[in-house]
Length: 116
Image (cartoon, rainbow, N blue to C red; front, side, top):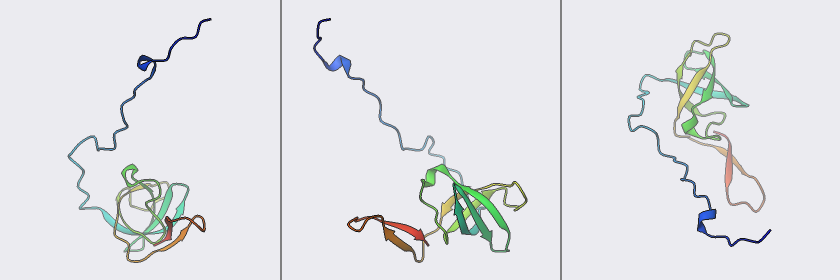
C-alpha cells in the first residue's frame, strides 16, 4: 500500500458551535417568583419562597452549569406549588450581596464560589 500525501481536502472543517440564542425574542419573566436557594444537589435546587413554600427547581440551561449556589436569590417559574413531584425552573440569578469562595489549588488564580 503506497503512502499518500496529506492535503487540505483530507481535513474536515466543522462549523463553530453557536452560543447565540436561537431567537432574539427572549421570554419575559417579570411575573417570576423570587426564592432563596437552600440546597443544591445533583442538578436540583431546593428553594424557599417569601411565604415559606419549599419548592424543588432546576436551573435553566442558559444560566450555565455552576451558576447557582446556596444562598442565591433566584427568579423561579413553572410549578411553584411545592407539592410532591412538582418541579420549577430557575430562570435568573439576582446579583449576589456577598459570597464565600475558595481556590481549587493553592497556586490557582481562579476562585470558585461555594456559598452566596
